[in-house]
Image 1 (cartoon, rainbow, N blue to C red):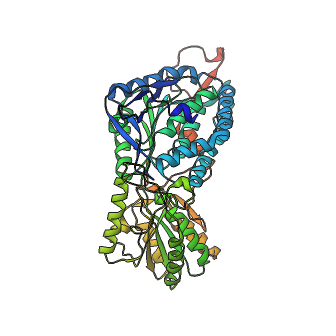
Image 2 (cartoon, rainbow, N blue to C red):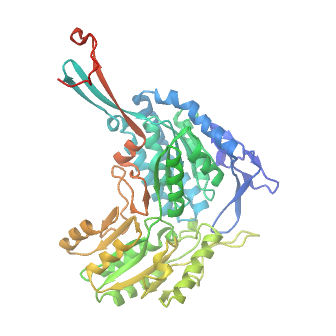
Image 3 (tube, one colour):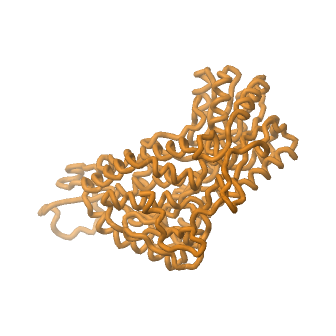
Length: 516
């Protein structure tokens, strides 16, 4: 799989390979003349050029999905499930290849990339039970000699717009369920990390998925707008920042589409005085600095309640300073940020945190980073673990989603103040409480206005058979990802009322039908 992926559809003059789109079961060379660079964030080296689709190219990829839909819709559930199981087995066997691609383009360490693939695979396994999940219902003799039954049917062509931070897992929140339910898919991956989507497309083909059922459209806003406005696309699934999520939701729904748009986050971790502070410190570091903080479920605000802050901050600092930051392929604890722009943005937030008067306990802008810069490159895009204490809620490091390895400690006196802080925040994606008090935990999960809650679990990403989604500005639309909500999102209901040859109902009667 890896060798075929690196065989370019077209090659630029500097010998760096040029990637492609995937439509109708084959590679499609970009013709717009526009490209963007794909880089290895650990070295800064350009590893590929990515074609950015024109509106006409996007329309052609969508048309391939539309052409494939009738045949896939009419394929039996048994046949669809067989292909899903085959895809699952191929992915299990080759998960390491996919993880390597993720590390090379995103920068996250190998174990983190492997975990991402495993969590995505859980949704594939969930979708293998699609026959049970799309069952309708039936009522015999609902009215005299009248039977009623309901069915769930696929939408048609569905669009998926996925972010850079989880190039495999986030698309897998959506496309296994969509495909299993009988839809055809156009996936628009992030321009920063496109190779995972192309690798998955080739794996689907090997699994026997009919041509055109799974397609990959590479591009920027032109491609996104094509998906949002093309009448042949019936739904949009999006994960990204809140401003773009709002744009996707408003534009998609204005064009008659069903939309689930998952936005940004500012996840809080509350630590009560009775908590195990060593456990809390471990988990704060894991959740704050894993994947260099580039997770929508990362903990970026730690709320220390009562008089534990000094001890807790010292424990977190000790652990943060012990982390080894470098190339994710080389056994480090934390990898680089995804691009030079991300590195500059996160460093700017650290500057702003210092200027706000917060105490900089651990400075990620300094230190040795373990990476081999490629010849002619600018080096890797590194920012180390960063810890602030005494953070005020007006500071940008508290209010903004930084999407980097910056953990801010806010001190409050009481549990109630901690809950008020979370509920006042415009985001409502995930939150966590660390305590040994069951009563406090039960009260917290009831009172906090957030979609996903962890009790002594810092990153409460649900299992595939539950749904993933936040509240407030973390979600636009009323349907979360995967689980039974995902099945309902990718299907629509139809109710059939039947009567067979009943002479007693012959003749003219213009009154409204009644049940009797």
